[in-house]
Image 1 (cartoon, rainbow, N blue to C red):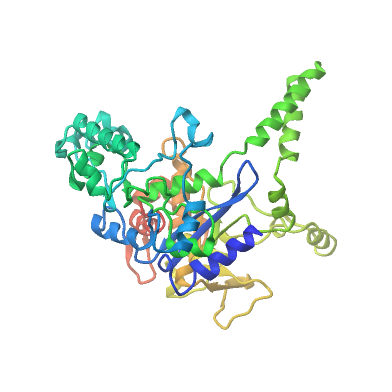
Image 2: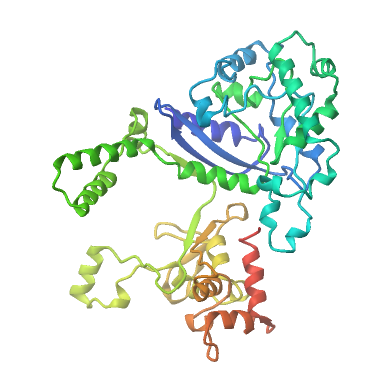
Amino acid sequence: MFDYRWHCFLKEVLMSPSNQVGKILDFFYRIEFQQRGSPHVHALFWIEGAPQFYKNTDLEVAQFIDQYVTCELPSADDTLSEVVSSVQLHSKRHSKSCRKNNTKCRFNFPKPISARTFICKIPECVCPKKATGTESECLPENRPKCTCLDKDKKMRKEVAQMIMEKVMDAMEREEPFGSVEELFASVGINQDVFELAYWRLETKNKVVYRRGVNDTWVNQYNKKLLKCWNANMDISFVTDAYAVIIYIIKYITKAENEIGLLLSNALKEANKLGNLSAKEALKKLGSVYLHNRDVCAQEAVYRLMSMHLKECSRKVVFIPTGNNIVRMSLPLSVLLQRASSEGLRSENMWMMSVVERYQNRPDGVVFADMCIATFCSEYRVLSQNEDSDKKIALQGGLGFILRRTRTQFAVVRYMRFKLDKQEEAHFQSLLQLFLPYRTDCELKPEGFDFYKQFHDEGNVTLAGGTARPVRDVVDDNRAKFEVD
């Protein structure tokens, strides 16, 4: 099965000590099903020591990429050449999917040739618009509105367009050029001029991979991984954190076209009945949406066999904040037992929350100045079946906790409140998340009417006896979880 094969590939190849793509610190993957029903994987890998845009030099980034990613059609290795030719070549006839959004090829094939891997990096905007509150005009996607970046350009846009057109024309002629340099020479340029022209026209951070004259239809891959995987792969270096966020959100929350067709048919059926009110028609559509979903045969097998559709290396913990916190009730059997024996009261019908466990954390230097975000990220609750000589007892007999390993701290999630529309809820949430406290009244002590007032003007005494402004404590703890 595909999932089992991918799981083995992940554990035995990618995560092996051989470090085929470097040492993997974290990973995330989701299995998605194409219209034909075939499963494929969208995955992200965090590599130890990988260079970063704007922190490392372009040369360091390019050298790292060349270690693990290639686009060449191999000639010396017959086995790899056969695999690349069968699974890594984009069709020169293009497909229906290529022509979405009225484009010739939305995957931009054929790709540009290049004698070396180079980085198209858009410099940060330094124009006065940043100081006037109109910095959104200076973002890469809005560059036509901002001229501050053009002063560093050493080539006019019209010249750059002419150069790129000449290169593309030479590529399409498919003349027998012996090398990239030979093709460039035929149009009167060299690699440096090509890079400058490419950079002049690009509006986003981009990696241009090294490609020979015969490699323009080859999708990028890792040589060692492709031999093991023996199926199509598209491996890319991530240019920025924003791209990662967009990638994850795009595929986790990807809409399913089939349910739209199902709802459309249900609406047609409702209209045929004729006498349904708007409320009844909407109720019928809601029932269809909640109780139906088209799946392919492969996905049906996945779900029937409880195979993983997504997996990641980090646990995710949700921290409830605000006034109206949703609580989980105890199982019905427990509620009935308590009602018949000791009497059921509002305070003993709820499951233990993470907030209550945090408020009853142990005394001592380690936990005294710890906010709930750090508590949930670095510690987990031991189940009744677990035992460890490193377990830590919570106060009030609320169970035990165990510290997670440093490389496996959990990701914390929490509700966001808009500052301009929900000011009090926003500052209450910040205090609940990032200010150490034992009782709720410590978040808005006597003498303060609003959470914002305590956040802006209050002081707290930490375990060492040092008094610090509330704002500074919150900002320091918040910075650990909200880096940018």
